[in-house]
Length: 281
Image (cartoon, rainbow, N blue to C red):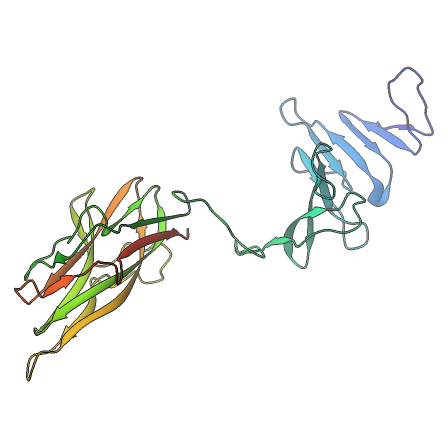
């Protein structure tokens, strides 16, 4: 049996109703239509509060439409002018977050999230060591490239140290040198933590998976025949890689079919080599 309470006032700091209220079992509803505030405690372990709904599904459930609104705000009065209030709202089939001015009449640029998990924002930023990382040096010097075998020309700098399991974009800029000799120089990834080559695969979310040799790159080739030119070129190599454990040491291994010091990576005041990563998932 429901109990209706209308225009009730209690003067001892208890509860005041300026509109109708209804108490049913362990539920209390105040107001009507889109102005409803309700509490539901159908079981002792599941209390819920609803605003705009008599059937809240979560601890706090705010419901509305384009007319009555469906928004939540959180205000910290100790923060800067027009930066005190965080506002969440639903519109255009997306969830939105924004900072409101102190009058709460206008907001800054919002970040938007859709059902597929796509997040749109004006800019994304991160910190070194968490969202991106760089390895470079002015003291590496020249490094010979292994002949007919895979190896890391400099195991201190020609690598990516990935802090957490996830998917990364691995990039490098390298000065590749075939100086008066014929041959080629190619590259691959090598997980030095697990002592295993990564020549393909290892990309979460790809519909078919990467091919078995998708991580092998032909960096430069000066084919045989005629006079061998003197080449010193900057090569950029990019890889997409998913790691499944933290603190993975991924080496950039190279291989040359020319057995001489003229098949090398060069680093001096005219140009340095750099390896960097960005976490993307």
